[in-house]
Image (cartoon, rainbow, N blue to C red; front, side, top):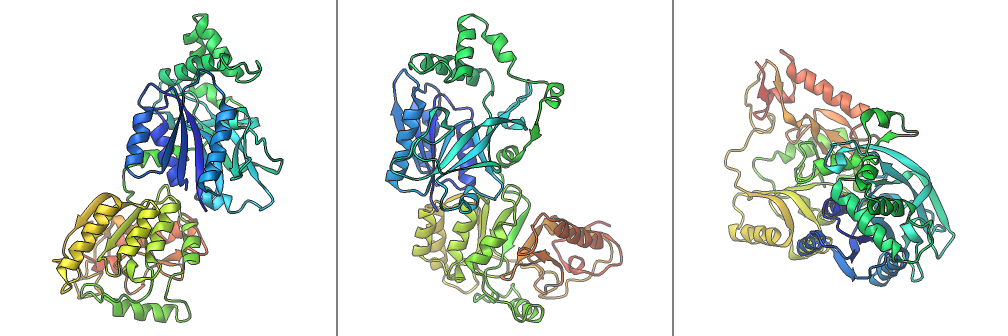
Length: 503
């Protein structure tokens, strides 16, 4: 599925980059942006992101009028012409929030006979003095106002405000499965741009008086010299928010934007198949494969795309990263590169710990075309393998894909992998480790404690049956954490050099 977001912007530098980041995480493939007389850094942001590989197409509109319905209808039809499945009509201050992990996961569930989804619109209630905008997490719904996402069509169109389609009546109104969170009041600059510049453009447009009534009121107050009093009334105290009818707290936008640029310390490692052809000396594959055969004798040893997708649907992309490492080299799986793209498209921070065995130029080209970005790449050589070949592949991946953090180093001092390679000794007192929340999933959905658990002794749960943040998973991790912290117990962590000694 391909998704396009259409957006009309004017002086949105305080929110635009955050909006595009969020919606890329939510599955948007392409942005069609109409720039209407921006004089701030809006165009610079769009140019920089486009140069960094974001699929953005900018259309200039220099009219002194504000003809949103006409211009957004043009963009919706342009999206169809360029090729897409769904078109989301949005403003820069709106964040589309599905109950599913991504917009694609939600839209694929919409019945075929439905052409348009009208999503309920939630208005942010900003607290005086709180910035940036996403730290304000209180919202109240507009009961009778919606925003639209549409199947791409050559005759598609929207009304003023992006509230309704003009080309079809086959609509689905969603009250919870898909919501739009609207950060309309964010500070002096945004208020001036909206009510003064926008209100003036609206006044030039010869539209009915009931169109954009809130903009018109703000412009009138500006002309009367009472703009400060008008804008003061648009923010709230904590006490005022508590008495707003139907107020709710939604912090997903806050979580994602706060985590932006940082690789989360909580992750899930994906094991693509049982049995790695690398056979590295520091990786006890014989122990792992025999343990898997004993515990899961009838289960498949090779991960499928369908099962991976189901597993990832049970993981929160805001709080958890996906590592392609686990107990097998991902590129040795014929679909390993497609697994990486799948995780990226679902909005996860994606890390790659790899020897690059099995990597080809075709696989890298696939990832590049998919716009895959990697939050962390850590490479290590296979002892005895052609160094020039490894360096060539390393250069290829670094120069082709966008990578936030890149490391490449030999494995000079391997650890015993929790006693799997040799006996490192037993520590009877308490230990702890940051990896209790960094587990490994196998091709059958079974989740084990960490990358040192080659003997599969510490089962956490099953991702095909429960969510990664479910009570079942939390209780299992707590049991292992408590057992490790106690004196006199015997478990994997008491034999691992990565454990942190407490006594």
